[in-house]
Image (cartoon, rainbow, N blue to C red; front, side, top):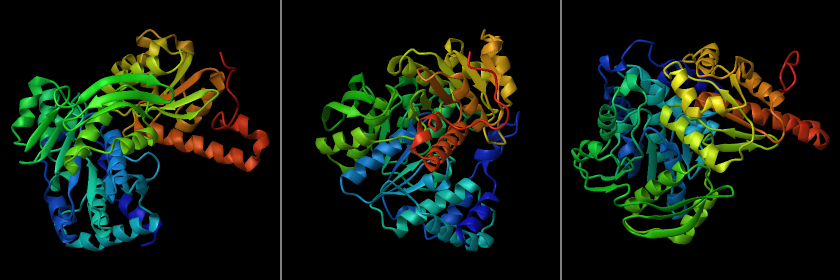
Length: 467
C-alpha cells in the first residue's frame, strides 16, 4: 500500500479515541482484554521484548515527561524509540526514532505488514492497538537501545501493557476517563499500577500516601517517591520557561533552565530524569541535562505560537489540567485581557471545566466544536459559562475551530492574549490553522506577513468589531 492507502486502511478500524464510549455506558462493564495485542505482537515476532523500555502513565504530564526522557536518553548517546498519543496533526507524530517522526513510507510499509497479518488474527485489532504494535516493530527494526512508551488510557488493560517496562513512571493520579477507569482516585490508581511488573523500578510522581500501597502491592524492585526520593528544591519563573533545582536518588541538579511553561513541568522533568537515571543506572551528565532542558519542547502544552496578540495553546482536557493551566497563566503571562477559545469532548462537564479555567475572569469566550465525533456541542459551553456568571455579550459560539480562532483574532487586540484549550483535538486543529496562515503569509511575501501572522482568515462576512 502507498501512504494514502495505508492510512485509509488504518482509519477503517475502530478508534476509541475518536468515537469513545456512548453516553451513559460504563466501559468497565465490557470485559477488557489484551488478547488481541498479545496475538498481534506474537505474529510480529514479539518485538517489544527486544529492547528495554521506560513505561509511563499518569493523568497529566506523561507526554511531556516522555519527551524529556527521550531527549535525555538520546543526549547520552542511545538510539531511542518513543511512542506517545494522541497526535496533534499527523499520526506520524506518535512514533519517533531519536526524536524524529516516522516517515510516511516506513509507516505505510509497516501498516502493510500488519494488514497482511490481520486475516490470521482471531479478532480485528483497534486503531490504537495497530499503532502500538507498529511502534514496537519499528523500534525492533531500527535496533533501538531503549524505548519510551506512553500509555494510552489507564495502564492495566492498555495496549502498551504487553511490554514489560524496566522503569515505570506514574506522573500523578487525578479524576479522568471514569468510564474506563472508575470514578475514584483509588480505582484509577489501581488501573495505572497495572503496568508495574514485579522487579521493575517505579518512579512514583503521585505522593498521596493513601494511594502508595496500591503501587507497593505490585512488588517493584525499587520505588522512588516524589518529595521523598526525588523532588524540587526550587521552581522559579524565568523568561521563556523555568529555572529549577532538584534532587534525585543519585544526584542534585541546581539552577537549570527548563524551556517549558508552568510549574507543573518541573514535576514532569524531575520524574523524567529520575527514570532515565534508573534506566542507565547512574547519575546523568549535568551539562547534557542543561542542554536538553534548555531546548526541550512539548507541542500543545502551554505552547506559544504567536505574538501580537500572544497566542497560547494548551491541551488541558480534565479538571486538574485546567487548574494547572489557570495557575500557569496567572504566574507566567501578563495580566492582559484574554480571549479563551474552548472546545470540549462530551465526557467533560462544561461547568466544571470552565470554572477550573477561570472563565469569568476572561475578557471573552469563543466556544467551538472539537473535530471529533465525541465533541460536546459548543452551545452547551456557552450556556455553562453564562450559568457561571459570564455576561452573554462576552460569549460567542463559532462551530469550527479554524473559524473560532479567526474570530478570536478579530476580537483580540495586539497587546492581548488568545488561549486555545479544552481538548487536544482543538489544539491540533488550531495548530494546523495557524501554520496554514503562516504559510499563506509567506506565499504573499514579506509585505503582508505581519497582518497574516495574526491568524487564519475568517471565511464569509466579517463579524462585529472587537469590543
